[in-house]
Image (tube, rainbow, N blue to C red):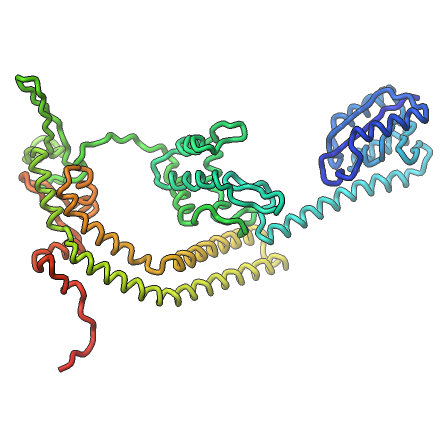
Length: 505
């Protein structure tokens, strides 16, 4: 009688204590030689037996059915099967005398044996796999509950094998953070972000550019703000976030807004887009003219005029040269500039308000922390309802996701308050800084440096009519100009308002 020798080694956990394939083959060859078993062929497979459909195993059974061999030599029965389908097929072939003998290292199996013993052995092998699966899933759920991500770390992080945690990749994390900031500006494509990452050393496993779909997955992965999704649920992670949630939210907004390609824009002249026609309301455009002299020199002139898009004869305004227009804009900037004496007084008041705000901020921080505790209690009650089967899974997942996101936002508010109690004073501080720099912009010869503060102050309220610049400033700037007309630049007494109260006689 001829035999097939079968050896299998799985990469799964349950096979780590089993002899390797080389050791199995050595033992089984020695066993066949000692018992004078004729080996017609050897089959070696490196695949788990927990699921049916092993190609080498199926090929061996086909050749057994063709009577090329009527016996099998293997280390144990669990090497042949760990699932009911393959185990039942072996039992059936043995019962029908298709397989006449199965020899393992410790016993023999014949068609006349009690089928119960073989069924028990196959059942034990199958139950081992099922128990192992349950134990692994239970361990993963416990790991998730501790806030540990039970999978490979995304790009920008590393798996610390020794500590079994996820740590920040010092090199790639900076590139990922910069990629979020780049895309949040709203003028970059996914391909641009991929090129940026490639140029800075963040590449695919093959050393190539990330596909734009992979870049979008990175930019929408909540793992980078300290959250992760497992089993359809969102959880808070113990890993260190790479970015703040408000930057993450800005990126998500840009992704939605950039659903359609942006139209190409032509670069205008320096002062284009700043002024509107005071007569018809159309935009002011620029034209270049060149004058060639006899000595070969070329003079360049720039003229600004109304576009007259309402039609011929709709506007009677003529052009103005760039030089007189710039002089008028310089005068406008000087009218709204702030002296150094006033700037120092404003900064002193801002510092006082900042100290006061830090005291008031403690109460607000306490309120936010109480809100965090309240959300945590809601999450616990929601989990209890789900365990008690009083709520559907879909509703549970939606509510849990909403609460986790809300808790993350409140946590970041607490962090911002702890870091900067006077953040609400930043607009005032920025306004004082902008106003103090206007005089410098007026004296500069760089036209873009004039255009930026003018747009910030007046927006679309700068008009050109009869070759004159007309302005309409919002309240803060209008008040500053009125103060310049009333008080001397060295007088800062009017800035600090009198406190409310009863004056003494």
